[in-house]
Amino acid sequence: MCSRGLKIFLVVSLLFLATVFTAIVVLFFTILKPRDPVITLHLVDFQHFQLSDSFLYKLTKNSNISLQTVISMKNPNYGSFKYGNSSGYVKFHDMIVGVIPIKGDLIPARSQINMNTSINLMLGKLVNAYEFLSDFANGTLNLRSRFILRGKACMLKIIKLKTRTYTACKISLKLPYNKEVNSICKSKLQFDL
Image 1 (tube, rainbow, N blue to C red):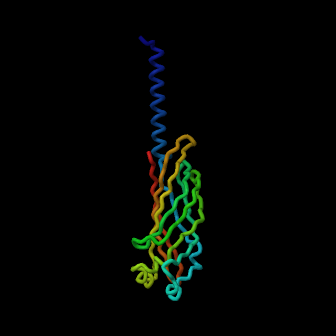
Image 2 (image 1 turned 135 degrees about the horizontal axis):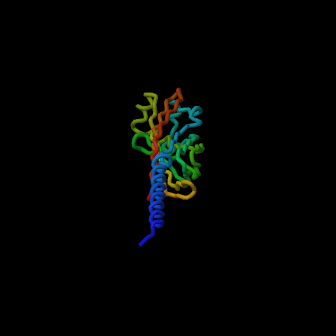
């Protein structure tokens, strides 16, 4: 049989392990709980973009334009996120009219980065869309953008998990003279187990 001292040691050890396990679970579900990133899209040179009636008539089907864009990515988590090169697309109604190349980078824990990129907009395809003239006449061009960032999340330099971030943005361009841009983005973080 076990001595009384060994029994006390086992009980105290089990209580200690249960306390540590409970503390880890509580920390993970409160402080270390994975949160969705905050991503915003800013069109930088839209102020210099001229889209007048005379310009529209000169366009061909293969006309393209590159709009300089800044994508701000805020990581509210206690772990860093490193992602590889990716690309997104821009849709007008249900037609793809643009591509967004995204260069791979590292977003440190609880910080924000600004990434310079460009939207390669296929103006010929956009202008020839059935709904374009009615939206242009109303003064607002509504676009949607989607992209997925695949990478690894690293927490406390110990835990590394494959992660995906899904982002969908609604971009509203006020045309032709107001030059106001509104974008609302929603992001969702998902772990690949």
